[in-house]
Image 1: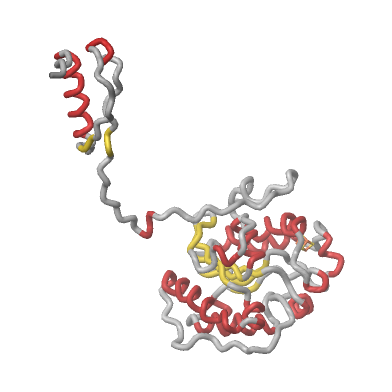
Image 2 (image 1 turned 45 degrees about the horizontal axis):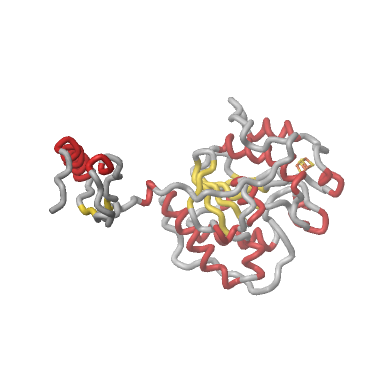
Length: 288
Ligand code: SF4
């Protein structure tokens, strides 16, 4: 018959077991170990507790954290957003005056007209594109080419008119050959975009295409990773979706964009039209 363990040690085990039960652990396995002397038993570690599986708590949709996004590498001498606080009394006319006849980046060299933005300065919804294309550069207005016509259709399908929303781009001058704006150009110009968004203070920002989305979210992830999700931008709701020019080249993506816009409509309380906007299958030139 095995020796009884000392009373003091037994009491210690009892209190430890009660502790485990208090925290929901009441199932234990006893390790096999050789017979111990009473003095050696003092050194024995307690049996390993087995954690009872706990029921999973449902997580509400609103409690879900925003997806963790990578941060774009920044030029050390240029701070995009972190150092930019909202400027008291800022306004679109003041921002436009501050831009002036801008030569801050190399895009000014090929510019015909600077394309600042267009629409309602108090809009609840702002669309942000990449940069002006040929038509926009000629007219000084954003999204006036074929992609712009499609954007107009999308806006109308949402139950709005173009004058109800505000439309602008990450860079205000046309990149040559309709290339994507380069990192230095985005870094130099995008603080003006940030000021525009702060001045308008919309309820929802829709980024059209990866350049706008990656700029505002400061991420290098592809748009397909976060398209259609609500993301936070300085306390505002941001939705990234495909650029209308992409839809002109890939009409099959129209349905995905329409789903994204329906989420925007729900937030803004818009009924919209019944049918999704028609999309031509002809190839596009570019941009906004
Ligand atoms: S793109 Fe922006 S920063 Fe560059 S020249 Fe035009 S307004 Fe200035």
